[in-house]
Image (cartoon, rainbow, N blue to C red; front, side):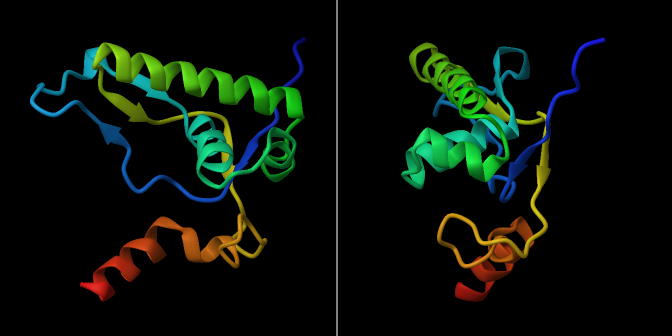
Length: 125
């Protein structure tokens, strides 16, 4: 019996989950599917500047698993960019954190959740 996969901790859901080249109609069958945990690895390493070890600790996974997730996500990004295919962020084996843990310098995950971000954006307009 295979070992069950460990759930990856994710701070928040992405605000936008679909990206497509300008001027090209969106064809769902052409889309590259990136999982939420792959998105989180890209966010933590490339956007927040975490190294793979710190990313792994944050996501509650082994460093080698973080490296594998990150490499898969980068491959999917490159396919989307080079081939001009839509990118959809969906699915994966993840759990949103409880909202009371410190994360990536934002002061707590609860302020980075989708609902809070949308409320803040509406207030600023």
